[in-house]
Amino acid sequence: MTQPAFHRIDGTLYVEGVCANDLAAQFGTPLYVYSREALTAAWHAYADACAGRRASVHVAVKANSNLAVLNVFARLGAGFDIVSGGELARVLAAGGKAENVVFSGVGKTADDMRTALEAGVKCFNVESIPELDRLNAVAGALGKKAPVSLRVNPDVDPKTHPYISTGLKANKFGVAFDDARATYRTAAAMPHLEVVGIDCHIGSQITEIAPYLDAIDKLLELVDQIEADGVQIHHIDVGGGLGIRYDDETPPEIGAFVRTVLDRIEAHGAKTGRARDVFFEPGRSLVGNAGVLLTRVEFLKPGAEKNFAIVDAAMNDLARPAMYDAYHAIEPVAGRNVAAQTYDVVGPVCESGDWLGRARTLAIEPGDLLAIRSAGAYGFVMSSNYNTRPRAAEVLVDGTHVHVARARETVAQLLAGEQILPD
Ligand code: LLP
Image 1: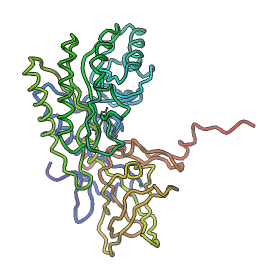
Image 2: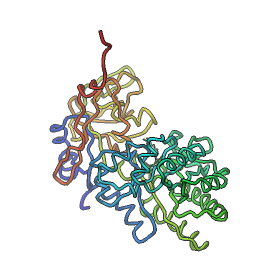
Image 3: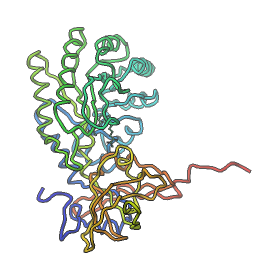
Image 4: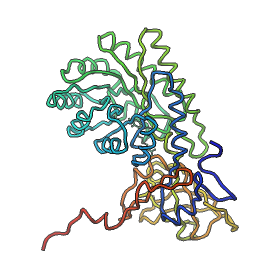
């Protein structure tokens, strides 16, 4: 990469070879913009560190499920991590292969299980005994054996936002560590299941390696016990990927993270004479910093206590600030020669929680374009139609070419499925 995918020329923001002002003029705002180069570079950070080792990368579809984005990864040979039948349909439509799909999620429906079994997914990450029972029944009815790994809750604190920490005892996810050995015995005895691996996921936006190693050590201890019971564990799925830099976070380099995890698992394999495959399920770190949300300033509104910049994107377009108090950098697309002031950047939705950035120092005027950075992960996918706001368009920039990855939704589309009462 000669220059970063998002860079400035004469003070104006460019995405690869395309000026952000031109994108907004052509496609309107709010507009999600992704860079193919940035997606590809993030993929290589994982894939290159896995090369030559028994490791594979399964893109967490939930972070960004646009077909064009998934297709970029499918072309690079990615596997995928899904949590619904809908996500499986997206992976297949984007050119991904079912045999490289792992199916996670705490509440899989029988329909979703059936579809995934018929498609031939690689593994079901199962989270409870009732789910094992259901999968066993569905597989039996289809005359198949379902490949399973149990998602074990290692009870480690990933030190992230409570809403996105998932591996603590208090969370709804996974099989409790103390019950896991017995649950494996139960699974192994079910006639239509085949135990193939073990899985965990401790949380998201984790910016240290240590919590992963704590979880892996606990998992490896368990693997020895499970194998002592005569059940073979062929793969270890370590869950999601690293956190990213939104503000001043300093996550380790992806390659270093991958190598440290693999070294730990391989060392255990060497000691016990058992080599195993390792799966990673990164989402945020593949797509987060490969996307921005462009939004236009509608009004500047001085207030008694603060100034507001009212923009045309809102909490329905990017829910993370309202939902997790999340920080996203907000930058004017072009410089402007006016006095900078401190603004809360807010949307038009009728909620005080509808904010995108607080106390930001910006030199802006109405009509200016802003870029909300790090919006590629959990951005568009979490958007809604609240206030009957059509969802934003998404474009994928590839050099100087702009591909419309998703056309802007229309109000007519929003009304299409609804009916008023008959006379
Ligand atoms: N695998 C499983 C089973 C997961 O539940 C998740 C994320 C991932 C992989 C991907 O993790 P990542 O590499 O992205 O950290 N909406 C929240 C994040 C929720 C994450 C849920 N699980 C946010 O905007 O911060």
